[in-house]
Image (cartoon, rainbow, N blue to C red; front, side, top):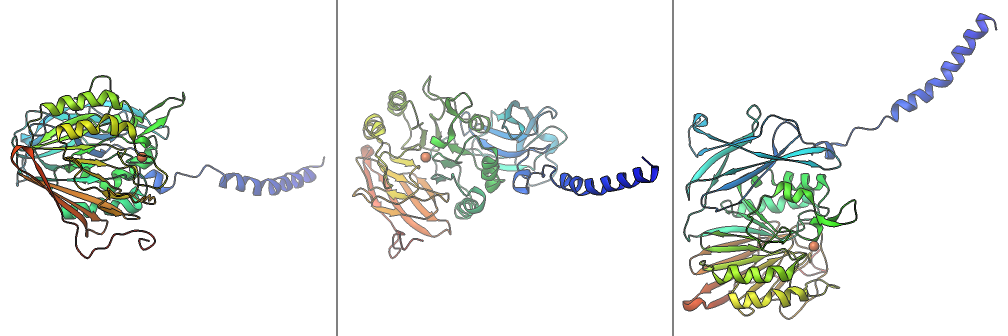
Length: 431
Ligand SMILES: [Fe+2]
């Protein structure tokens, strides 16, 4: 072949190959979209969450996430101070680390426990690794005796954490900025193994989760099938939520209680081991020094939604204990509608929804107030003999309310305080 012919062939080959090379360059795997990138763990702490592993009057537990491989995780705490030179007085607490393979990326979850705190005292704390720190957060310990306070309760979040649930949580903070904790009635995300969904949940809360401790109870969506076909509590749950280990022996997560200023808050795992928890519940309520008792769990005893059955195992297993021991409030989720009972024996039953997944209501005689297609949050306030309950819509307006009063010998009276002139939001009017 003549050199000129060879050159011509080479030029032709280059021209033919050029477009396909260009196509190949474009086919390079695209970078993760920003909605994924934003949840990648980094050097700085995120998903900072307060819980209690022991007494709320003298302790706090904090959990946060980073990428693995950082320096030793540490938390610092100091009594709250209006000045700016408190850092030197801060006490350092070593954290324990748990690695989590999310299948999307590796993460490290760190937990530090602050112990020996003074009751009813404001503290500043931060978390990090000695070089890289979170901001300082302010939080107050509980009083060590009964005293008025409020807490927030949210039914299922599960869907629309970033787009639609964020406003619910933020509006609840506007209503009750001094709420002392947040109760979550399970199904916090629709797939407990999906790191992005947890990222959306904690993104919606941001620093709220670092300032207001959470009391979560697991729902069916936190139980997922593992690769071996076994259904287990999602690993994110145990990594993120360090909860008080005072449940019945042998019960897999979710059963625990704390006492807060005259109220016993009991979380039950309604997904499994119902019978095992009944005896424990009866026992801890038989020696309960608190005036008020609130139980919270995921499945409602009485179903609210079309096509759903009552949970007979809970009615048989737990209701006799609620009746016998005088549980004042039962807070649940799962049915993606709202309904509230009157006083049944000595208990008021509430099921609510805070996220964006909505079901059709199945109206029953026990429902004194109900809603469809409405994102809600609840503020519960306790003051001596009075417990007031408010349900508010995502826009902050009062939708439902009632009041309980304790009389001599533990008698309970009930007052319906649903706002007059506010019609129920029922389909099709509730769009
Ligand atoms: Fe559920």
